[in-house]
Image (cartoon, helix red, strand yellow):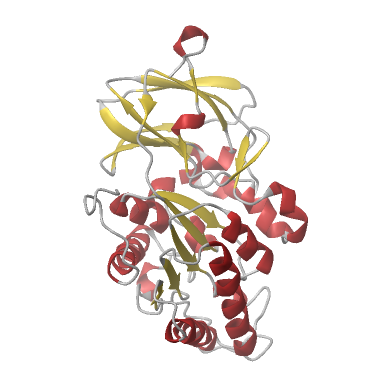
Length: 335
């Protein structure tokens, strides 16, 4: 690979978890189609959640980047304000970031081998170059659509959200399309997902359909059916797993403005998925979410703690391997 002056390589070949670009920024929705998205979706899509560097290095290496201001809502998340390097799923180092809009260089003390470097996503840094490492081999892409729980909002570090954990376990390149405060199954998102290259897909939304933008059970069933139809137009035979909403104690039996409880919305989603499976979609699988974690795993009554994210990740990885026939690393040579 050709090197720039001073041994710097372009960061592009190292980047993983990338869906779209807006200039030199990695964004998580199609900027050419942003006008059709809710403002909340596009605001979260501008944060590079799940975007990371995957590399192989013999020792310390450097990353050149351009920092940005911290997103207002992300100021509450301590874990979104640090660089985090992992080897074999274990943290090797964590380096705090400070708000300063300038081009900077980060030195990573690395013991050697393959690793992943998660940037401080709350600052939405633009990753420009890498020196002293080479890009890791690419893995099959896993597209994961959902809400704040999918985005990993309550995890204490970017590496600990359930899509990140499950992706590492399965040997997949996780592309996180989770949008805090949004993800109601918008048709524009379904069409964008259909157009995005990927080998495996997971949909995990519905919690925000109880409140905020209230859905009836009928609307939920029709939305899931339509969303799946649009996604399948672009990914007709890819393994696709639907995870219904996790437990939310206040919402389980409390009707929303349209008379639907979260338990009712969950059942409507699951019924719609089962109907499509019965109609012949043998690459579609369902993971009921109600019992994946308990109320004790919720940090605020809605979002899982790190242990809860780990439980969801384990269940999703198992379901993708068993129900959706996604091979585990080493099987068939694909991963």
